[in-house]
Image 1 (cartoon, rainbow, N blue to C red):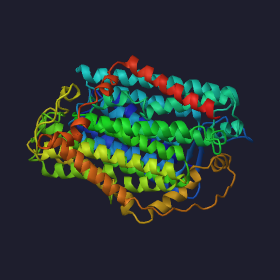
Image 2: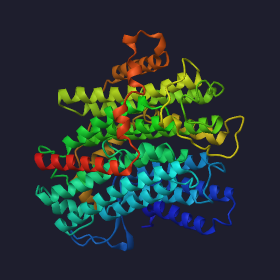
Image 3: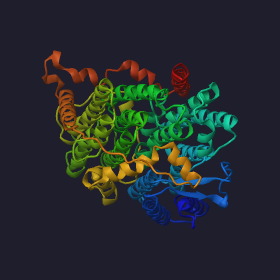
Image 4: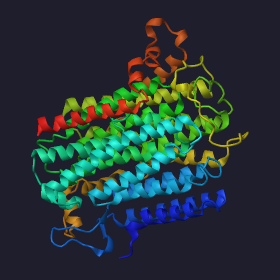
Length: 599
């Protein structure tokens, strides 16, 4: 078998090495062109893998080190349509990010292009690997490239500070993961995830619980779930726009993917119903992320920080789908993930256009200055509709399936409320920016310390019109966020492959080359349009109330209390990495305590 599964990882690493070695002699346009062609090739390779793995998972063993009996010593890739689809999404976002930065974004002496390709290779490998230790290796490779990309503007203090906070917090996550791997190896003597799943079985002892706590907590840091999330707003507010697209579009979601993969394959019987000790902390942390960061999103006035807190709030909503873990819920999670990645990528590209044309990310400074940018304004407004999940955007389809997969009436009402809350608050912040920046309505919003972050424009020269290289990636992202709704039978096709993805038994049989048949799953009837309409109405209401707050009676100034008044929450987001590490330990203790008490 030709090494097709390895190509999405090997090709960008090889081209990154070539670009790094020749960067002093290559013109900028050559480095950009090679990086774009490489990302396009990886998109093609990953898309081929999605098609080839539809009916059965593809197992590729490096060096032909296939298992002997149940002993798997070799390193392998397990290619499912879900993993290959995430690799394709990584390649698509990287391609659009590189198109956006064509000969414009400061490249750090041509280091930007190889770092982006390394980041792409790490995300692809992370989605495809079947080895627990290599999951950590790709995690670290992804993190190392992300640290460097976040602090690419080495002449400015703010990016370096954001990269430092990012590095410290994610290094703690790496320590958690490595410790968890060591404990799993002590319990099983294996690193292949299928073999670990066989060895652990239904064990509920202390060693397994502690290993699970370390692994889940480490990947929750990568997923930026409250209270592990503090690094993300600091990094997003200072990172280059194309890098923010990758951070929010997929890197955060890959943390949730790892939590799902580990919960199913490694600890499937140990954390499955009726005990399900992992479900409770994930539901609690997901709910906390939705509420806390939804409120913080509306309270921000720096465009990138608005979008960063929106990402965390939506990541909490996606974690709820992961916590439920049924085929229907995971199908909804994947629809949500894709549509959110596209919508948030488009909004970040549009924020970059504002920085390019108007040289600021501050909502008060930008007041009424976006009036000439009519098409940018329309896309920004569409991005707000996408965050709500209003038809035809796919986030609403994902929410409907997750809610429909819950059979406990009280929990279903709570989850529906959370989806309403995150859509209304995050879209309300986007609509508020639309009213103030693009329409010039009301008065300038309140200024805060975060909105005063001085951000140097990412390109050298201001252009009188928005160039196509900036606008086209944003347009593609917003249009693709509606793709799941537009493609006929996409949900049924996705459920077919997800049914295999969430089965520990199917995964283990695939690794060992044994046939296994699963009973068919069926999509339930959904009816979430009423929730979407209510979220849209509330988002418009609070956005309008914030913009026109001085015209309202004092008793009705709800948005005045939501906008810029969360002093205690703001103080917690201190910018000090020591505080962030303490909060990560609080989250670790909570996850471990739940596993101990509920196991």
